[in-house]
Length: 209
Image 1 (cartoon, rainbow, N blue to C red):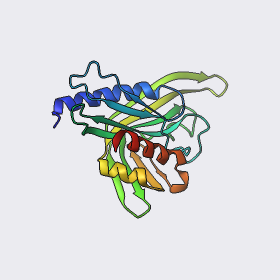
Image 2: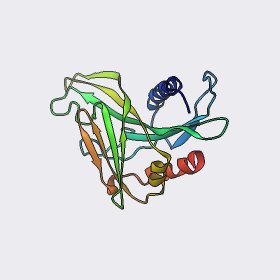
Image 3: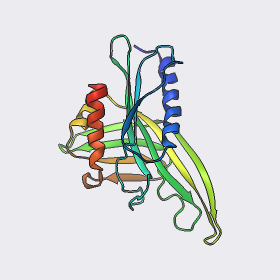
């Protein structure tokens, strides 16, 4: 069993890596092995990125760029026996803020608090989100409209059991509610990107199962 200190250190690594990955542009789903040269236990840690759940925005519109909510799975395994020591999601809401009247923070979740999946048979998978961060960049000013805007990324980490991830990976359809300190968003089955579950299935089969 891993100690609390070691687990906390790996969470810190996840947070740092998540911030780096969310700074990248949109792209295909991919899984990377995190550099463990500076980790005492040398356990392999695999992190996915670019697993956007939906094109639907928090406010109800639709994105035409790389904005949106991403739920990227990660897994760490004990290098000696192959058992899972850490499993969960890096969560990121790539959004923005504008001082334009009526827009402001409408697509922000704030501090992401909970993710709840509803399976087709009615089962619920509830995940508490921890290690929340908010990062801003790219401030710009529109002299014609006289408003300022900047990009903002809201992140967090949610652990999940292997059994729960398996249920998600094998599900044909899901709906999802993500709650934050400012706003919440519900993605119905029709809103979920088809690739979202395909990517989870691929990650589970190759790196977790």
